[in-house]
Amino acid sequence: MNCARLGKWNVLPSLMFFVAVLGMASVSVGQDKPSFELSDDVRDALTPLFSRILKADVSRATVELSAETVMGGKVVETADSVYQIASKYPNQYTVYYKSADDRKRLYSDGEKGVVALTPEAFFRLPQVASCQELATRSEINLGPYPEAVLALTLAGVDPAVTFLGGMKSVEVAGKTKYRGSIQSIHLRGQQKDGVSWDLWISDEGEPRPLRLLVDLTPMLVATGQVAVPQGYAYSLRYDFKSWRVTGEVDDKLFQYTPPREAVEYESLEEYQQQAAQELAEHPLLGESVPDFELTLLDGSIVRKADLKGKVIVLDFWATWCGPCLQAMPVIAETTRKFADKDVQFYAVNVGESSSLVKGFVSEQDWDVSVASDPDGDLIEAFTAKSIPLTLLIAPTGIVEAVHQGFPGEAELKQQFTDELEVLVQGGRIASSVPADAEPQK
Image (cartoon, rainbow, N blue to C red; front, side):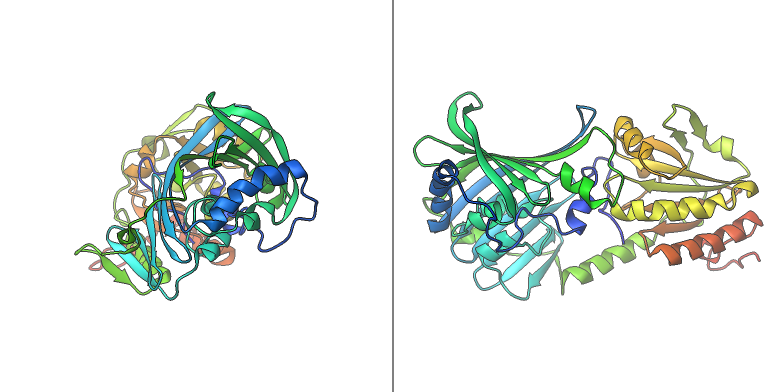
């Protein structure tokens, strides 16, 4: 299993993997009715907006999303993305999601559905979901928490399904001037899973959504999948830059015309398999490792020259990458067994600030040497397209094995054990030997 493809600047928010993989990337919990009685002031605040959306035949919206990671009261990571959405009730829509490492478009003309994964790759959907189905549970990855924004931007959708289902409480927090100029009502909701949201609705003329703030920290703590550092917080802020449920919407927006060079895939799975094959062909395999310099969390420097004559294991990871966190203890345990045979393991964090990494690592029971690569220089030098990426480097400086993704605990442990047994004896691994050479025994 791999995390997202990487570029020098393409990093996702911390612990994002757990938001998506645990099925929590949605405010909605199905058709559950609230287990509490809505107060009159909450009903009066929500009904005008929810009714406008439910009765709408068309919609257009541009929504900016900012995902913020906080440590000790300071914002240490920010990831920005944007949604551009147009729709016609009941099942015509286009949803464009654009972030630093993902640009995806979802089209439906009411009869045919298409997902444009990149400008060069697309696949057709076997069936078209209605606007309501899309907003209730999106089958396509359209960002970290797509149902929340879709429920407020797709025509004919009932937002109550998303914003009142599975709730513990909803209250009016007060009235205020949004950004100092727009009269607004501020509502606050608490879900049963601990997630909380704040919604600002305009209180001038016909209501519209202004901002949605979702705090995912309690959910991440409750999952127990990773140890969340003290003082850590993770939230999503949606700002509705434009929004309307009136006027005209051109049907051309819902139609997809593939570029001449675009490749059609049978399914998302086929596209992912093709991408995995490309990733498996790592250009450094069998080559000399490039010069590198590791900056450890304690500030010390480790250079390539310092490691001459040793077997080196370099593992590139990030706090948001679930497969990385699954692989880390397996690699650490396996390499530790070879520590007396000059095997050294360095876990290189990619694209995150050292303060975030220090806080995160302090809560984990890893006992590994961690280096920080906040600007992605190392990951670029090692030509990684996805993480987790682990390189096994022989005492000669040759990259003898490359592991990408997490195949499972037992398989990874066996692979590493077998490969390290060969390397500590001065042997070579067949996968790194040129086709016209004989691997050493």
